Length: 165
Image (cartoon, rainbow, N blue to C red; front, side, top):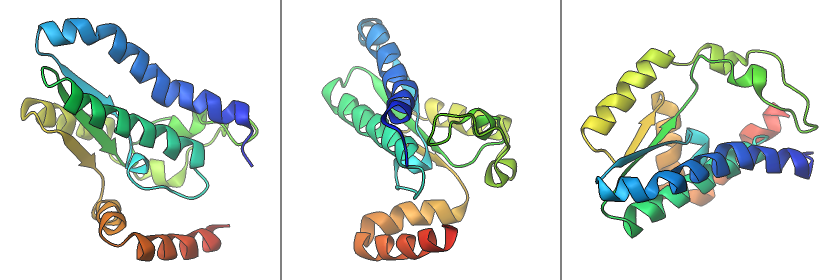
């Protein structure tokens, strides 16, 4: 179970942090027809069991940027939704009680290199893409599956979650 303080901290870092920076720069971005690049996550597109605070923070960011893209046409918006990237994210992540997780998650250890992801992001910005999902085939299909058949998606993810528990 997640403590509320932990959930609020995750929202502050993953959502409000990016929104605060965006809002501070928005007047200048509008004047120069700028480009916002927001880093979300595959988990901002599909809810992953046992990662509710993280998924919620990334869903919120995705929705905010989707709105901003429509509301302020002078500014280009690209939302990046990466899967796992080989970083220290899991080492610095917090548990439901607020303690540091402290170990490298096996999925992160097998993820893309930061250089590979950066190259993909740079190409997406140059091409003025609205969205970029940087992940293997299966997570991309899960996103599509969730959109096309939500009932079946949640049935399958529920079974997966029971096995993980």
